[in-house]
Image 1 (cartoon, rainbow over the protein chains, first blue to last red):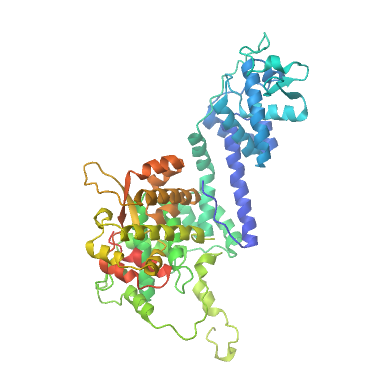
Image 2 (image 1 turned 180 degrees about the horizontal axis):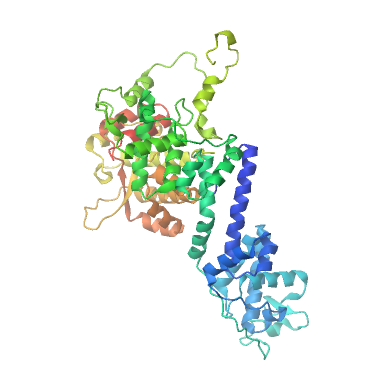
Length: 403
Length: 164
């Protein structure tokens, strides 16, 4: 899972953090359910979650299986195998706790590490593992060291002589003669891929919708890429972009892209990158996000930078054969013409770029800030008009052209 | 940050620079799929020119698997190391965002997924099974690439002049 794009704007960052928190909570819930956590444990760790939601996720991993009843703390030392597993868990827990990671991640990692070393059958689920660590922390179970080899041994409060229970020193360590066996079906832990698949199914749409809004996609466009997320996108627009979401149809046609020479070059870049990304296996929202990001990387901060909807417009017009790419015989670059234009009659925008590169440096150069690397907001609909309307500092209002 | 970060951009520039240096010190351009004229152009570049051209935000080469039965050239010195580095950079990119690796490093989504499942040792092993290929730029286009001053202009031109 990739992290959401970072931002430097504090207000925007606060809302993004909220989205991140929501996504993290959902992922934690899936991890806990997959590893057999009970409802009270889940609520204790991640807060309010509905029973129905937990049951739905549990059903994906364990079907209609009913969990075993919660057992007392004797359970952890009932057999030599369980005592050994408990001791291994406590050794790993003591090491992990120093790493200062969030509680759920700590328990998930601890359970993953334990599953590689387990000897008891059935293995402890995450709920039992959490109860064991809590019991030790509360002092209901003690952890002693073997006097001979120094290994950690988990023991009940009334048990003495850790050397008798040490599984390193003794080939047949002492254990109780009567062991209670649960009648519940043993839990089967799903693979990491299966867990990640469910996480992607649950949080993928929220993540993609947030990312699309962050790049300035209209709610209607978000709906096309992530069905069912239009209302969420509409709510997110003012929070992340500081303006209400644009509605209605797009106010531009394919003519927009040939109104200025520069736009032909922009459109050609978008089409060529789109084709390359499609051939590399990207599709849907992922493709358009990668396309827009690479477009901003190359053209961000220029006067003619286009917003997300216009980029999508280029691809649409190209796929509908309203636009085509032609190559310049001089510079070998490509540019866009409309279907009813004659190739070769236009000024090649790439040749113009070379001509500008060859132009001698001016004696005094106004420092230009490369805005592309500092974008905190994407180009948004109406940006050009807003810029036109803004009064420049020191401008004589009487002769201003901004009205 | 809505665009690629400066750290990631400098990774791409470093890979391009290493590639151009390997080509410049090779015996022929055949094993990189480079035409003779372009190969001579690259060999004639001085250190400053190599640095300037390498500062393009798109990778100037792509990797390809060895196909059994095809003519295998002797791998030039440093090439497995370059492929190894590219794979590690691609894995880092893909961990941030898969789309980033695909759009900037000419690597397929499938390859990104397989790289993310690999450890460093496995990646180094796999590097021996790959060769690199210059992106489909003609000699004229390569010569003109050197005339552009800023990385974003070069990036635009490489994307627009590639015959793909």
